[in-house]
Length: 239
Image (cartoon, rainbow, N blue to C red):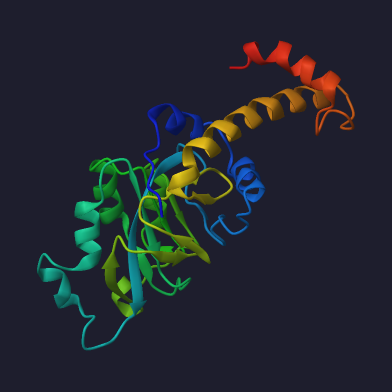
């Protein structure tokens, strides 16, 4: 797999595009399964989320290994992940779509935020979910879950390929979250997808403005030659 660095310009562009637009851009490239299923933002007021994936994988807990004493040292993988997730990255947790116990709680999410992470995603649940929602930090999960992770989850691998909400996530993939959910972009095409989706967003804003004025969609969405010329004149005014 080729690794390509997302440029600062395209990182900013991704903050202005929707996961809906991104999934269409990815579909055009043959990628149909890049939208993480059954996760939603804890707070509708959190900013858009864009960052490289830093992954944590859980397997089912086992009683002789997963007890409260494991948190007394400094090597528990969940805690190590929180302390090593690089700034600007999104922690993505494979919780096996099991929200019967929490993937993390407010203290750990707050620590991630303070360390400069871009967000956190789990296909399980978070405890202290009202407090996490109040942070204004991008956080996505399936549903609230009060029980400690040790009841159901054994933290294992850090920064290895995982599955989250039925989507394969590789370390370094670009993870984008908005009010609708979370999309994963393979790193080697992230720059071209960001640039294309940004231009598509400009066009869709133009289309929405025209539809609000009463225009029909034929010849507008998708555009015919006349509409493309009209958009080209409108485009410099897009903010």
